[in-house]
Length: 429
Ligand code: PLP
Image 1 (tube, rainbow, N blue to C red):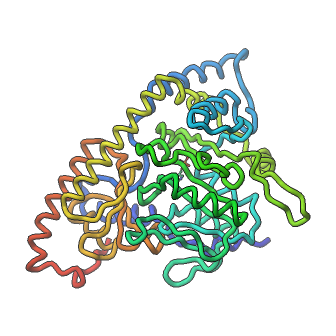
Image 2 (cartoon, helix red, strand yellow):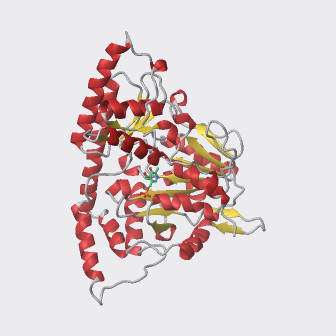
Image 3 (cartoon, rainbow, N blue to C red):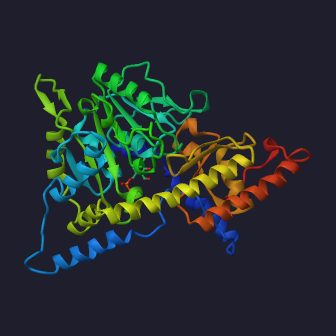
């Protein structure tokens, strides 16, 4: 028996485990510390009443022999796929079929599993910084190659995003076959305009590459020039798959539901010359390895699209966006370089003293008990940046910003006389 030894090439510690380790170590030393957690991107607001009501009804149906349901359709119930088509696509002038939609238990599984239907020799491009799932699943599938010094993978193409290019990745200069794009972006909180996304679609059509478009944060878009779906761009229905989630749109991180759009028009040539639709391959993969999302959960997701569900979910998104605005304003007032947070629940900022991001993470934890996420956990280009999330309560967000403001104003005064980042020792937690 042999192992899939690609797993052995993964990083020993996943970003959030390392954060948890440092936080726990700190709490052992300071058990009474009142932490404000602005690190992990999990929602905190409860499910909308319309969703809860739909789940109660669905549970009652499951308890009656006349309305009980066993295994559901492999792609998901048609009642949900039709609502998705109507509200998420037709309403934006995008013509897709319910057969192009695959209901899933969330976007992460599908983003991780999609590699099952793609050749192992494909050259994969990722933005840098990047949501780590794309890199780690490429490692597991054997597409990423060895880990090189600097934290990059030998066979991946990194599209660097930083202040110099406005965090907009440039088209690759070497040939690539698969491109992961995530907009609104985790971790930077930035977006691509329609014109910027069109460049990628045109590139993929020209070169035969496939775009895997992660739109998990679509619901946070407020700017009219930012596309909600890659299928707003003509031609994307021939070169892109889109991954959506109810996690951040409707608070389903614990409930688990999402969907993947695989248009039947996305077709590639096999080595024997046969033209193969990715929809057919993904359908085959899912019907073999996945048995669907529970009926109750799919009814819950359907309720997101009712007028009450829409109003309630939008109110929750507005709540998080208010937090994002407060964080942006608060950090900007300190003179820090702040990005994102306008069309996304993430705020990305540069360490104000030019120090290493893990070092600044430790300082924020120790000196103001605010938990953040170090940018280098998202790739080499994340070094020197940190991410804050807007998913906390208003009260916690206000308190966190106040702590940072108070702290940094004293640091600034001190820095002119004694503070020297290069001589600061790295904390031990
Ligand atoms: N994609 C991105 C970019 C994310 O940030 C996350 C969660 O943080 C996910 C996907 C996961 O979505 P889901 O909860 O639907 O699996």
